[in-house]
Each structure stands twice: as C-alpha cells, then as structure tokens.
Length: 295
Image (cartoon, rainbow, N blue to C red; front, side):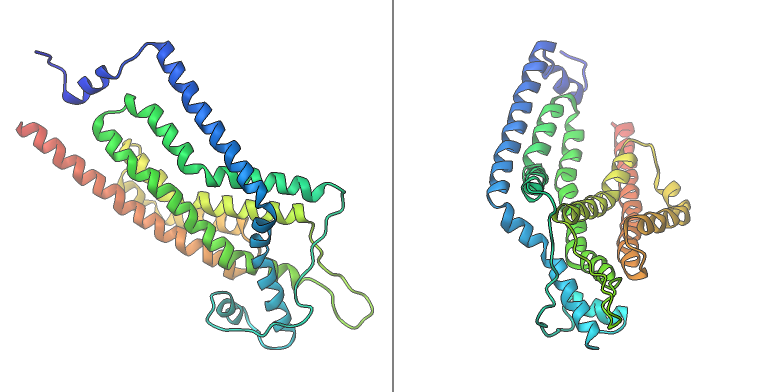
C-alpha cells in the first residue's frame, strides 16, 4: 500500500517524460496560435465596425463640448451626469469631431493593430484555458480547484475596468482635449484633429491600464495563497496602498480630478475586498490545519 498523500499520489500519476511534456506544450501552443489567427481574421473582417464602436466616446465628448459651448452643460459634475446618462443633451449640427490619417496606409495598419489587440481579447478564454490545462497536472487537486475561480475573475475584472474606460473615462479625456481648442472670434483657430493611429493608441493604453489595475484582487489573493502577504499586513499598510493608488491614477488619467477620482475609488474598494479575501483564505487554512492535527 502506498504511503503517499492522495494529492501527492495524484501528481505522481500525472508524471510524464520530458518529451511528453514538450509534445503537450507544442499542442497547447498550436491551439493558441490557431485561436489568435482565427480571432485576428474575424476582427479584421469587422475592423471598421470595431473602430466605429471605439469612436463612440469621441462622439459623446464632441456632443458634451458643443453643449458646453451653448451653456447646456457647465460644471464637471454636470458633464458627469451627461456621461452616465442622468442628463440628456441635444445633438448639435457640426458637433461630431473629425479624425484624420496622414500616411497612405496609416488607417490600414491601424486596422491591423486593432485586429491584433481584438484577437487577444477575443481569444483570452481559450488562451487562459490552454495555460491552465498545461500546468494543471503539476498542481495538487486543491490547488487546481483554487486556481479555477481566478480564470473567471481575471477577465471579469478586466471587463469592468474596460467598461469604466469606455463609458466614463474616455469621454472625459476627450472632452478635456477638446476643451483645449481655440475656437473664439479672434481669427485664429486651434482645432483638435487626432490621427486614427493616435486615437487607437490612447484607447488601448487606457483599456490596458485600467484592466490591469482592476486585477489587484486577483494578484493580492494569489499572494495570500502563497503566504507572501497576510491580511494583517495589508490592513496595516492601507494608507500606503491608498497613496499608491492615487499616484497611479494621477499617472494614467488626464489632469482632471473627476477622472482620477473615478479610477481611485474603485481600486481602493477592490483593495479592501482583497484584504477580506486574504482573511478568508487564512481562516480556511487554519481550519484545514486544525482538521489535519485531529486526523
């Protein structure tokens, strides 16, 4: 009779020669590359529609700016009400902002970049599952069960951060940019005509920045599972965490207090949620240790 712990026996049963691991890795890589290629083709086929979808915040910012010029929207909180849909504004003729490209193939290469970014986002569930399927045989059964929720939490939190960018942050960023124009009656006009490539860079940068910031609970919970951090340590350092969040918000958002506040508040709340998650892990680990001593 084997004296191995059931978890250790499970890993022993999954052992394989190095060549088998390499074959398995090649299989997973082929699936990932195939998924990305397929996702790239789908996104490129709808690249114009996707880009038009990404232009919606720019269009909303133009409407808000036109409403501000006519006195319908005044202070920043009034603008916030428009963005979140608590106040409606009239569509003004000529309020739709324009966009340009200055090189013959610039928009084409922008579509390629957009398709590549979209392919990774679209196929992320497939990529994450292939990574999990490759490393799962080397994990204990309880570790595999503990890892699965993070496969769901990570993309969900990323989508939450991306939604905050698309529906709230981007309109404020673009409105702030439009407000820097000189459109008076002095005879001199300074208008914002962004390039299609620069706009895509702005959108993808903000999406990645906010999406990664929203991964804070996942990262801290994993560190708690690895015993690198504890709930008491996180609770004692909450002041430094809040300061760090405010600094990050000031770096990745435009220089207006509303955008910085809209990023800081959710991240700070997620930090305290992470403290609670780490505390639950510690309580569960304590109960498991107590049961093991009784057994």
